[in-house]
Image (tube, rainbow, N blue to C red; front, side, top):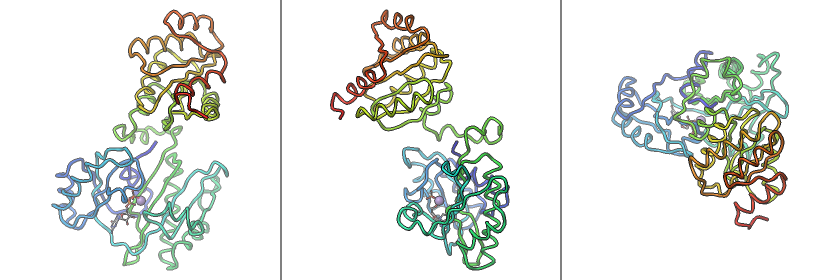
Length: 381
Ligand code: GDP
Ligand code: MN
């Protein structure tokens, strides 16, 4: 789950990380009032679940309250990486002497949280990673011990040479690790971590991603979810208990089981198509889940054909067939549908489909080939 910068900052502050104050506004007038209260130059920052806001015009300095209102008006009209801006954070501007990057991600290869630190932080960190990777220090963490002081000092010496700044940064790194591990993070990041002309070390940005599997035991964190800032398809899928990830391809896939869903996507690629999504309707699927799945997939204009690939074990294929029939009667399909099903109650499922003018295949390869051909107009490699 993504959370906003202002929410991540609230968490980081609780762990002692030095962060300038800030307040959230949803209208230009609110932004103006907050700027007036601070009585100094402020930064107005788009609150969306996307990086690169600075480059997209979503982070602007304002010297006066009137200017804060004007930049807030512009930022609240922006769409950044497909996400409309509905809130801005207004925060007193800091003077910046240097910008560094510090972050933690869970590295699947080493099965550990890994710290990353770079003295070349700021809005071009992706470029630094691509072109001058030696400017980024990576340091895996043993979660039994966390980030020990000598490790924090080593990382901090990579950022600064002034010993006071090194000590301040080392403390911040340990606080960041505590915030990350104490809240079920899968990512925690400060970019930029700045030094001010008077030598202080301060976090000006904050990003945190929470592992979805942590939400059940952390209701206070789960409450931070902002559905208005999420993709509507993913919101609907979550409510229907579907595991759904949107992709950019042309073949919409409805599959039961994550393994079969992955195999189906591989096969779609193999036959020259491109999956439009990952969608797992789960083990014991009821017809309503199928209806929701079809509604979500058909909303995407890229999708040119739909492929059902159902292996009936616990899942009853007749449930799926009933779901398909009721979804189509509610909302007739405008694109071709290929159904492959086999397993539990297969004969009943086939009868239900045939009674409604549909048919099913049993061979997975043949079904995928057919769906790809329909999606690409036969032009697939
Ligand atoms: P991002 O582009 O989405 O990562 O947004 P950031 O919060 O990192 O802001 C982008 C850039 O704006 C930073 O790298 C800074 O250069 C600049 N910026 C952000 N806050 C301040 C501030 O308080 N003062 C000044 N002078 N610049 C800031
Ligand atoms: Mn940033």
